[in-house]
Length: 232
Image: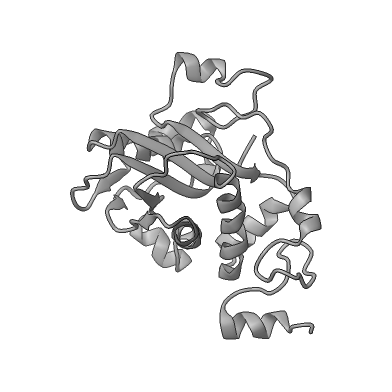
């Protein structure tokens, strides 16, 4: 049976077709096997920052200047054909892309056998003004199905972005860290010791680093970063 994708989306809120090639799949709401295999991954990522390294477990920068998080885990590289799908999800409100994107990350995380799971997942918050403008927080939409599949608590209320920062993508690399200075805070006390921050795309990692620093200042001992895609 071939579905009318637009009507199906309106009625049920998700796409039964592969988000990359728009072909009907035998596993609705997932990438088809061919497109899934075409998505680039980082074969030997640094255990800290998640960027590719030729050998070893940590890059030189992370050895000399460790980031304020324990690990950064990405499902894929931020490039075609994944990048336009994330952009459409984020900027054109194609919320039905959240599920197939989230499953890429969940699949990647489940490859790590014997790992210790965090107590909760915290999506990167948007400032209230930006969330009103966009109508949703893409990190929350991605975190919901990941949390459900991994059976981990989701906390999208404790952390807030009180500083209305400029969009990181519009800034030069040298401006991004200053843009996020003291951008995040807590609405209420937390007792977590191990958390995962989730976002759609990590580029310079300044956003997640700023959030990780804030969480660690409130007693969180281990912070992991989980993202759908890592920009190289």
